[in-house]
Length: 623
Image 1 (cartoon, helix red, strand yellow):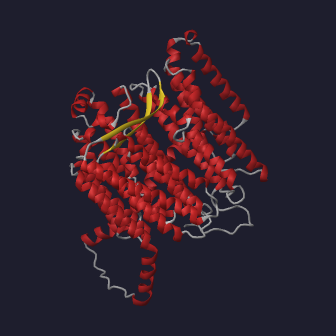
Image 2: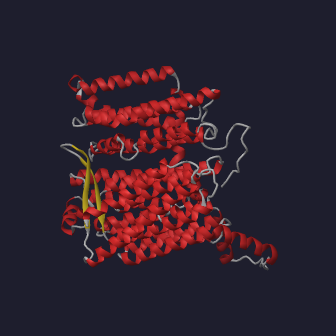
């Protein structure tokens, strides 16, 4: 049975490739590919689960493919199957099948029909990789694909302002969860001295011995996992991204933010439960987050005027209860609750346009204002205060903006003076000096050499923050990201003698190609009317859709699209940062977080949003 697990990854991958290559105008073929892919997957997983039940519920694992191997690191794809996988796989295939069939008619003659189904197929692939994953690397691969497909579906109405803006908001929060998961992987590599698998986490004695020897580091790993799960499942204080993600088509909102993607944090906690179940502190944190999210989201959902916003907060509230159930060890109840919530929210979202129409009709003909009392006592004032707070969604968006992003934007704007040729020459000279120190360390004083990795990593982060905050020429922002990546690789090479030129070449191989092709795409756009200013949206997807698609691939290639050399190189890069070098890991993690945001912001500003050409109709602000 172990050998069969890989088929549940190959089938969605095949469906995605065929969908990507299918004719643009053939709606029937595109829809049939999605329906048949999810339908065959559903039949297959149901049959497989029945055999698995008759075989007395064995835990299955399969080491499928070694992607990279050296003396000090091994990266491989590993598959895993247990009751959690069975529930998530069956429900996922069922919902994707039903929503694909619904979308065949809902999006008929929509200009982005093929884009929608391609993104759904990419999501289905990432979802199955994540839930069938047998180690953190495999899980992270699916995790990344889910984030990419989320961004594509939120910005589906790419000629409108709010879908693009909210797509960037959501991917920025998603990227934060990616970094927390990377940090958990980084520390687990150093403590286990191997790519730990989930089957090993189910070994109670092995985990107990590890926790006894490294309890502090174990708490750190568990916290990173919990933070990643909180963000992915829209728990407090990150709940506000969920309604913003509803800017995509209703059917994609049903799959992603009502049913499957938003519950991936639940899956992560269930999968890693054997590791943190004995850590009381972690359980208290999960319980507290669940209770706060349940209460606040429930209050917000009761007063929102938008039906999608109501459903989003109601779903987050129920996920808060699922977090509580997991922390208390009621896993079967959590799985039942997950299935019920996913099915119910999918139904609510799919019928929401019709329900909204009925409600408006009823209000027009049957509205009667209620008598209001003017008496104000303490209870009434308290209720009114909570009402106002809930209307404002407890100012969660504003809180995140002030704490998470504004300080880094402020710092990035302070280095805007670097956007000139002289500064770039100076930066290249500094890089050349650093490369010389890496090649001939014996010629450098030891005290100075120990500081060089941190200096190089700081320069890399400053350059990437400069690209993130850049409001001028997109060429400068693109150049800053490239230079930032060079300094990040240099910092690890200076730090660790085992991080040789072959690792640097592997990490930069995908980056260099993507950087050159992306630069050519920007040059092509600039030649049209000599304007690639990042202070506004240009909407070049109208005239240059192929160039936009190629530039998006370049952006994803630079940040480490799964199964690219850069993706492998990032894993190797983090493995070579020692566990006691906290400053360096923080600088590197922040660099990778803001790198993706800077690149996707360039893509969004140049190719998405309302077109600046008067020859195109002005799109609605919101979807």
